[in-house]
Image 1 (tube, rainbow, N blue to C red):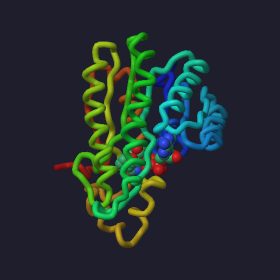
Image 2 (cartoon, rainbow, N blue to C red; image 1 turned 45 degrees about the vertical axis):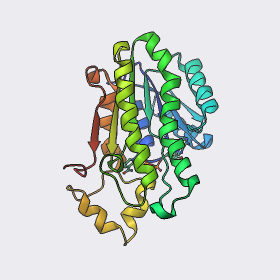
Image 3 (tube, protein in one colour; image 1 turned 120 degrees about the horizontal axis):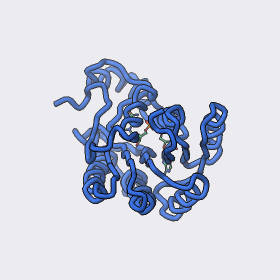
Length: 248
Ligand SMILES: NC(=O)c1ccc[n+]([C@@H]2O[C@H](COP(=O)([O-])OP(=O)(O)OC[C@H]3O[C@@H](n4cnc5c(N)ncnc54)[C@H](O)[C@@H]3O)[C@@H](O)[C@H]2O)c1
């Protein structure tokens, strides 16, 4: 029960990695606020977590909207009294080659990944600074570390998340708040096309030294580590849980 007594906000919790992280946190003793665009989906997850004996709530919120993020963090404080852990996991992709990418595709991806992570970080930071305790985990990507083809928006946003992580880590270190990032690789709805479409499937698998995709549950324990007291002297780091894709 590494997270006993802690309260965690997990964004993008309705499916994929976020849902697995919310379940792992609940299993580790945390009180969980599951956040996603559709209230019904996170309420259903919170119901399942409560049925398993955890304390959990679901809140509908678009992380790119500052007003919604502020309301979500206020509601979490009202319900649980504090926020100890923030997982900035919500994400989208809007793939297109550079010469075909629209301004809207660029803006949407930046808004969710980069502004969304900033919004949530800035909203939870004052409470954490006051209590001199915090664990923030941002989610970056191989694309933000090595670059990629057909997703310059996503790659740039995820590289931005690394900068956000390092700067926040430096600013918040003296308050007992650690800020780290994970670059995951997992079989989720987001990766469905590259895992199943014959045009991409083999090419992507060849890029993973382990030769397979992880299930989100295999990635979740890495989030538990960064969210736990065990990470008290680890900050500003990017850890890839990607089967070796980023080995250079
Ligand atoms: N799956 C992978 O291999 C992989 C690799 C690298 C990075 N990532 C990153 O991991 C994170 C989770 O990815 P996943 O694979 O589980 O994706 P997913 O598409 O399965 O889940 C993402 C969730 O985020 C939610 N979301 C999207 N926009 C939102 C918004 N504005 N506000 C609130 N919630 C929003 C979606 O509704 C969805 O439930 C993302 O940040 C993604 O970029 C995933």
